[in-house]
Image 1: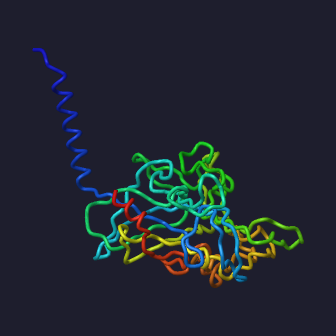
Image 2: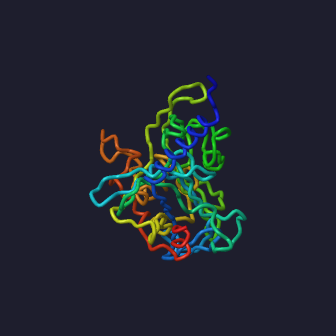
Image 3: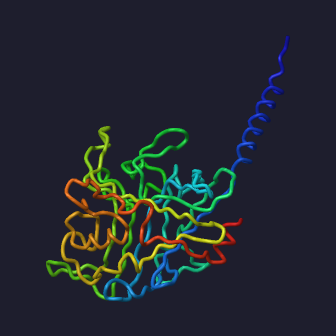
Length: 322
């Protein structure tokens, strides 16, 4: 008896398509927009800045980018549903990179014709009615891609997929990645403790006290994770955005001088500039008490003073509905 292969193949294809359509029907799209704020207004790209630091000084944005992961939508009963991120050059596994600078590195503010590199996270979530949002800032130790566990923070930047392949967001392989990298140019060069000068003042956040060499298969562990969660009980992605306040981040920092360590704060435990920066982020730089073991952990779970909910600009709202 001769068996026809073609009808069987077609039946399998139809069955596979039906399963895919059924799965898609159970999901709904979601787009979460981010905005960089300074002195009460939205900034980004090469926008001039004002009211920076303890001296309320003008300045220029040199860099503003950070990793986010673990997005969840929250319903009215407090139940959380994970957001499955679209996989593209800005999103891999459940990690995304937000970058407020434009590709040209110019001096102009962000506009529709001069947009920032990437200010939104896109994906799908199980169908439902949601009222809140949760996510974390940083690069997780690992995530899941194509059904497999993959290393994230300590993966090799030279071979990692985008957006984990950016050398400027890595310290070194053992130390992992910069989770949060903000750099500004104050009106005059920053005066360092030894009398030398630096053009910029920086905030670089990442895990510290790391041990283990991933190149030889060792498991890397870090004494201070320096990741933090952001939770909003009320958030509507169709009409609202997530604001990051540069003014609050630098409010108690003297951006004209550096008293020791790296210029600005690069997460050093003994860096004189780091205590006020970590407080602004909502993180403990060191243990709050002997034996507390809470250095590098969030001061208040789900809360970071620099993150808040704001009204989405009309153009962003329109894009989120597409």
